[in-house]
Amino acid sequence: MKKSKILSDAKSIGMLTNQSAYGWKGDYHFRIIQKEYGLKKLFLPEHGLFAELQDQVSGSGLIYDLGETEVLNLYGDNEESLAPAEEVLSDLDTLIVDIRDVGARYYTFLTTALYAMQAADRLSKKGKSKPRILVSNAKNPAGSKVEGSPLQKKFSSFVGVEGTLHRHGLSAAGLLEYYKDKFKLDLELYRLDLYSKRSSEFLWVPPSPNIPAQTTCYVYTGLCLLEGTNLSEGRGTTRPFETFGAPYINDLDRSLLEKLQEKQKGIFRLRPLKFIPTFHKHAGKVCGGYQILLDKPKKFHSLLFGLLLLRTLKEFYPNQFEFLQGPYEFRSDLPAIQLLVGDQFLLDYLDGKRSYSEIQDYLEDTEKKWKKITKNYD
Image (cartoon, rainbow, N blue to C red; front, side, top):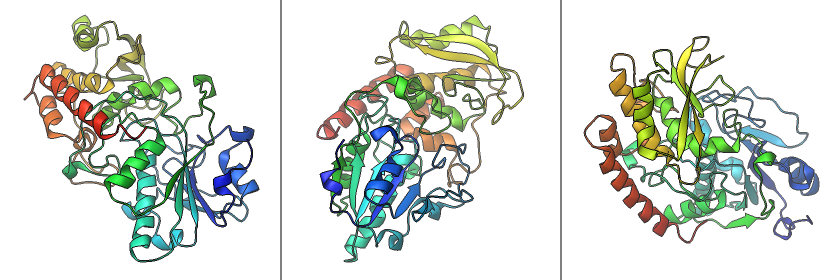
């Protein structure tokens, strides 16, 4: 690929990226930018540059030798660390956002990008110099399918931007363009052509340590809800989010298996198994559980399955299943499950106050509305 025309006049470049931005000219994209255009500042999201840190682990101690490029971590020890300070952006004329999203609002990378855009907008409103935003044309690995309902304001946090669906179905550039318009940000935002239109799961680079394969993106929207429970979401195994369970689950219980599979028959199957997480929840303990296998990935509704899974296990194991309490992604006033679900109607289902058919109809309606709202974004 020839040198980008849109970057030809850039004199002071910052870049929000990690190892998932790989393949342009056979190298990490930050190295290409650094070599061919100069890279003044490198901003790191959660998990670090090479996805070496686990979830909710501060990267404040990370050290990288990138020569004259300044490295700034945007996932530190407190909530203030999540956004760059205005003065950090004021000496940049260009900020490149080149990072893989997995298509779900809980995934924090594009929230980090939004926070950087909002910091740049504040500079603009103060009449100060601000960078233009260039967003790479990386595709959504989970595809254009949408799932869920808009996050209600009272549940907004680092793992949920107000108004965004659980599975948004947009590319990174599309979602950030939507945010620019929704929040009325006074910014110049352009797309940067770095990726081939052809894509392959065999060229997958994990954007974070627990998204080992592109197939993980298809189940993540529903199975990420397990983070708000005492169930293992498979961290500490080779297939996180595709493998899940707990020591108290009887994986040989056919009635449980049938209950979990009855709503989307022929679309997915659950393989009963036992596993021992090497770290995280239930580390070193034998867990009963399942691996989820998708027969028809494009038809699978991950969020509906995740909600059904939690309610069913709550009913089967009332004395053992628990929703976790305590701080989660810098908020301590609400439990993690509320921040993740982000919608009282769906939370009522988990509490047994609504039926599966009610939430199915509700989600069908909210998903149609989201598609209309975002039809000019992709």
